[in-house]
Structure formats: C-alpha cells, structure tokens
Image (cartoon, rainbow, N blue to C red):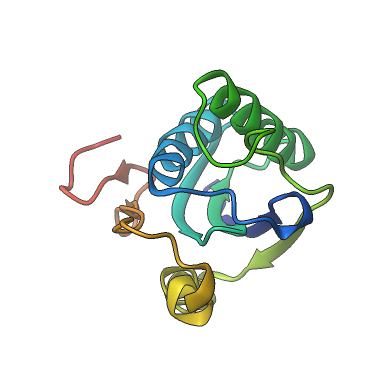
Length: 153
C-alpha cells in the first residue's frame, strides 16, 4: 500500500539569533536531505531565513519522527560547527523544541508556496546572497522521487 504522509516541520535558532548565512543555508539543504534519506523520508522543500527554518517532508509509516527531527537539528548543528559554518562565537545552535504539523496532499502546493516566500514574509531576516532551495518533486502516480532535472534520486 502506498502511503503519503507529509509533515511541515519548523525550528528556530537559539534565542532567534540571525545565525544562518548563505553558506550555511546551502549546507543545511544538502545535509537535511541526506539525513532524511537515511531515515526513510524525503525533504520536498525547505524555506529558510537567518533565524528559523521550515521543512516539508514525506515519510514512510515506519519513520520515527522524533528521531528524524533530532538528527536534523542535532546532527546539522554538530556538523556545521565542525565545518565552522554560520555566525556567532558559539557557531550554530538551535532552540529547544520544534513544531510539526501534518499536511494533507491537497495542501502541499500551499505549504510549498509558504516555504518559498519566507524571505518575503520576513524581509529583515532574509539570508543575503542565498538563491533559495532547489525543491524535489514526486513523480505523479508513482513512488519514485525525482529532482528538478527529473533525474531519479
């Protein structure tokens, strides 16, 4: 049976400090997608500003969501700090907690648009010199995941 479990996940930097740079944002997009694949999930879209991150994911019914988010947050902060990415004397630090909302298939386009417009919604927190995420798309009627150039992922 095919499952379509979609989630909108949001988390912020510690104290809502503007820690996310263009270099860090690019790293986060790649890193979060890599972790998602390891946890039987796919990141479909990421919206980011300097103080917080929105992520749209599709998961398998067996995916442990708390583990997924723990690996997203803890793993990304650890690796970003090892690579000395981001701003601040302490490097990248995420705030405690996160928001996780289910998304119906009918609402996917609206959520994608919401994520894409984060810089316009928070212009004072837009990431300078960052072009944004390259979203992933599902193949209609199938379980294959394809990137923007239609190559199988």
